[in-house]
Image (tube, one colour):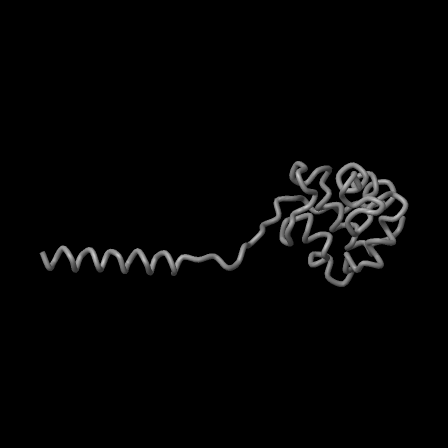
Length: 132
């Protein structure tokens, strides 16, 4: 009888240690995208994606959530709001949101990585985040 109680106690302690010892405090994101190496045009490539995926009613449109990603305000909003960092592109706020490394992951409710927005955004920032 004492052996069964001791076994149950030991099993309980093992389970308790396993429960508390198996916690996750870091998530590692691996990129499965191919790097975009051709020049990225903000007006011809980025703005159409922002218009279709971000600057929709109730989201990042005029009078909506910041940054305003409407065609006429996207560049200035991203610049003034410090949403990109040409010195450290992979840690730019906009890129972190798009990749899900910063929550909430963007675009909300959309297919993961529409139009290669992650790769294009990173390439655009790496290329100097030009208003071209």
